[in-house]
Length: 180
Image 1: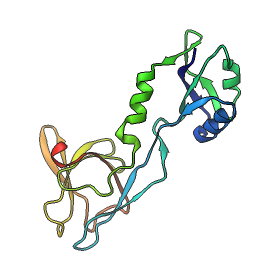
Image 2: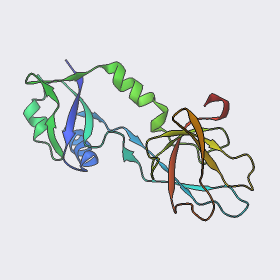
Image 3: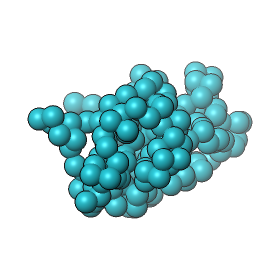
């Protein structure tokens, strides 16, 4: 019976493994996401964004669907780009169909909104605040944008524009305005 499994790929070989698995008739799923890079604000303007090429959501891993009684696991393991199957107790670990369906329908896989707007909840993807969630604060387009971070139960405003702005500041919008 066909089930979803996780294959570990060789370093940066997710797309190669997917192509070779598809050539063998093995259904595969490589979740990708598109990050946004925010360029410094222009005087009296809004920040500009550009999309970065799609990247693997789980670097080094790919989901595959096959029947081990039809396609042997050694065939999968010997596929170009595949390093091994994730196994427990010597048996490949099954991923429930619901997990894959959730991943396929998750909004993180669709392109993020172009530019954060005032009140949006964002995740910082680069710099010293990487990994933190914040609120994008832009009370007036003529002023520089700020991130409102919470440190030790206190709100801290971190300026994003102006002379000290990094060349490329990456964030991902997690929620829009009131929904944030």
